[in-house]
Length: 180
Image: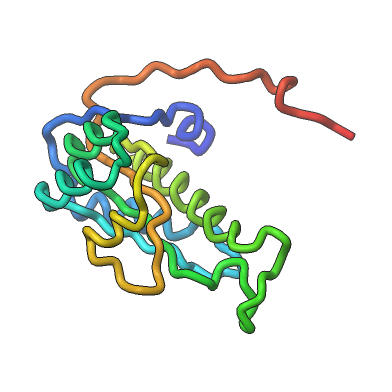
């Protein structure tokens, strides 16, 4: 699949077949995702894959801030990829000051690039994914025992898609683009 086709056909997948994604496939996806650019090549993103069904249930029931839709997605996915980041490196100078007016925002910028790169690499392998935003990052960190100095950036449930998902409407280029 070429890059344009991959980008244009990738969908958020929220329902999965009862078919495991192998560790080897996940390693192949991470091998591509690790190529995502980062602030000053800081490479602060880490991928934690939750396979344990009891942990998936615990995250689903205790860390989705009452958002039942995410509860269902997490509890029914094959695996949950947690994108974590090492704190206070991305967007910072060595003395601890911010490099730009974006402050700590660069950490999430890099996490977003990593998440999308992961999802595109997964799609190329036939693995469905969905980037979740409604969750309690501190609770997830507590449940998985995330070491100090790292933060949970996002959750990405993965699995083989149960069904094909139709594209959603997109704005036209002229609605999005301004030349000055």
